[in-house]
Length: 475
Image 1 (cartoon, rainbow, N blue to C red):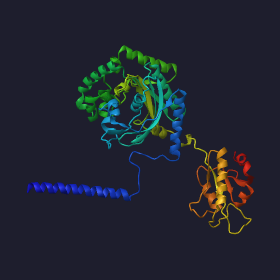
Image 2 (tube, rainbow, N blue to C red):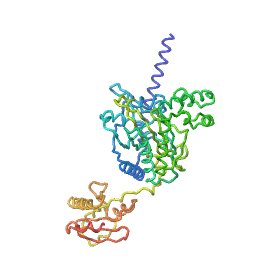
Image 3 (tube, one colour):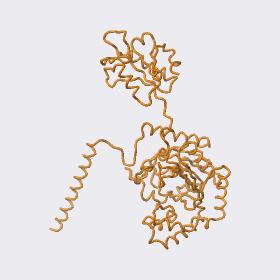
């Protein structure tokens, strides 16, 4: 009897779950579609702003001799677990990870550096050094969406692989600084740098931190207590109030640096001095991924649009040996940075973004049942048909305009058989923002004479000209 009772309750729970799933499916199939939480559409000015930032980034990177690279959005999960560290927040909490039909674990790319390192190995570039590469890719992290932090976001990044000399660090910092200065974003840019030293320095400092924070374990936040057992360096990056006064008295990294690490960092700071790039040495600056060593840096934009917690607009560091972690044949040095495009877009006013010139519209005068002399632009007439040969003439006019103008469109009717009166067409075109500077008008009369009407929307004038003079009239 007891067994039957348990089985009945289990069956009831299973039925309830099915009913809930069915109701959820019905709700999602009947309501209007929506974007996934933390993933946004970009349309109009938002997309123009996005492309404006990327254009500056690509131009700057190209001037430094960097070449574009594109990697797949999906990688085997081991690519990130081996390089980012299984104890990092990204791997532990934020990966979009799934098992595919071939029973392999796949991950949507959370950052670009590991993918670039994998691509260098896959394409047998380890013996063709150095490699200067840049990318602009979508990244995915399952974290709480907030202003300046989305689950799908785009990063522009550069990677200099194959140069161990600290001059490579200076080059990357300079490239990123030049990029941000060229954007002329409002707000003060502040460059923070630090050194994590070599592996020997890192191991010694990690042991010192573990001992120090272990004495204050009970006072640390839950996240910091977890990090104490996995990666004590990450506690230095904590913003939790209970951790701040403890981290303020933590041992200094500089006391555990080897002579080689000190010399490396001294070269970087001297190089920034020589280039007149202002910086602040921040001994509490660490990077959240396990592969970083030696120079690390962040650029903050002090702006009310971002606030303090989301002020970082660019971050990077050195990652020697990343390729060997992935199974490459050589332990290659590397250094690079990445910048979040969405965060830069937040601090850039819309008026600072150049908007493409609106296309020249070609309007078609619909045929009238009776030919009249009145061809006024403001007269409202019933909808009429447009003959196929007049449509063809309008498309030929548009084709000629595109030869000497960036864009042109034929103003089509939403009805496949009827066409709006000319006055309504013109009103519709002039209501758009930005308003086109010129409008071209054609009809049966203009087609027969191989001419067009050009209306200047700024001067509020119009005149009829030969199609051969159209380019001169529009320029």
